[in-house]
Image (cartoon, rainbow, N blue to C red; front, side, top):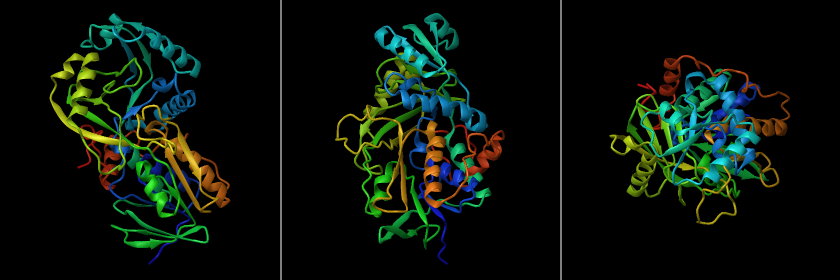
Length: 406
């Protein structure tokens, strides 16, 4: 029997589940559809960094401010979805000291807590750090376990009335007289739904979803490799203090370290090359900061696709594309459609809030956002979070060494 939700959210990553949760908490009837298990797109195939904003401080002040604000919120509401490691931006002998100073000044201007430590102090914190480290900036980076984060958002949305459908790909949209009238969900649903409003939160696939409604959303996806190695001996996140490049970050897990990453334009977020040189380069470059990872056993390797929004971008280097997010109101063309694109895992909650604000305005719903103050369900119970992951088939490679979703 065809159902008629108030809002259909397409995409079950962090942003999509965040939108579903936010709307459900405001009393909106929501259905969420994801083509695979929850988080199976970009969210569950990331490097899992909770940004302090320091990475973007000198190039994108607004993005950096978003990161540090959300960093603090997620620490308070996400519990065992977060590992509080701290982070270092390390300067090696060949790195430009002017860049170090520029980043430090930018962090201070943005309001990111940043402390300079000398190389000896950095090596006390990370004993196997390269002896070539001259100094470092200590910042409040941390680690996100995205499988838990996505599943916890979905679970809370469901508790508050949302219908969550993994393995239910959107296969068709019908548009009549400038409005979406029907959406067909395949897989586990295999039926038509008749939503009052559609939110496109499909990440790197957002352009494809928009095209089903005759809309143009200019995505410019870029792939990046992550290499997880057997190395339990680093605690803070390590960032190379230089212009962003391949192999400039090490993310600590409990028994492994995730090395990354590359940035290569792709035209298709599903069908793209996975090149050996990306793995080799990431390991080599990360080993310049942390030499033992060069010989550590590789546990697993995966690629993710960044959902970059750049309607005027060509096929060149995409590292310079803003990591900010955009909420696209399509009402001039399709009255009941909204897309949310770009952004980072760190800012998913803010992206969801901005999207829910717009949708509620369109629907005439007078209710505010609660997600910045309300803790995620089971946040302080890792076993309960992992049970949510199993329920939604939400295990991704990013945190496969930590999350027990059996």
